[in-house]
Length: 254
Image 1: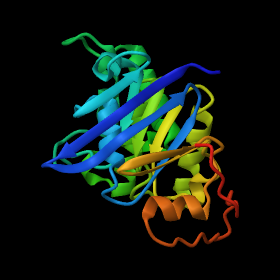
Image 2: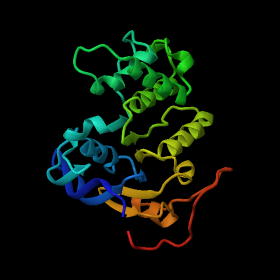
Image 3: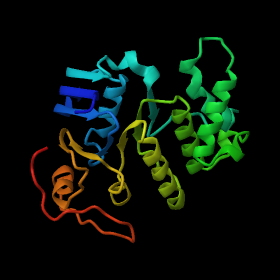
Image 4: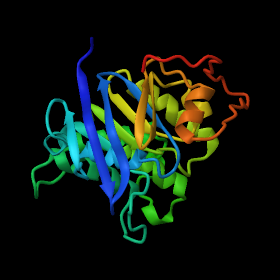
């Protein structure tokens, strides 16, 4: 059995007396490509923030590399769904990407040549190196999203958490991004929230359906039965020229 890099046990979380997550337990192995599906409002983003230590659970435990999440920030990369970034702030794509190196630098220390090389490599991977001096506010939403992915990659993470990382990215580049994630997954554990069921079915090793509770499917299979249970309504899977890993029979053993 591979090393467990993330372990969640009996997790519960409420917001303003409303249950968001209840009795959630699962684990993520080193090298996994762990995909989280579920309806809006089902608790997916909250679960990610709990795993990152940005929120505290009402009960239950979360361990990242065997430690509490705040103690492992140097080993984690994160691409949020909504960055909250002030796009009017005069900062370039390169400067945003270098922010991913801040946790690797002592406070007040200038960036090293290695920091710059890591930022360059990350921007090249997402196809934004040629725009490195472009102010972030002058970019399209999809271009900014690429830069925020580059910022996460610049941390050189051991585990990469992503919440809808292809939001706003054009469809052609979306496939490129997922191929990049596949390459990264050779050395980085990936935990990813997405609604791109048709695309992600090619890459997932493990699929988790989250809707207040969680069901984990270790074979990475995305089935109609899984989706109907997660979303609470009938779901039709339609292939639009993209290979889908769809199975007619939904078996147990989560």
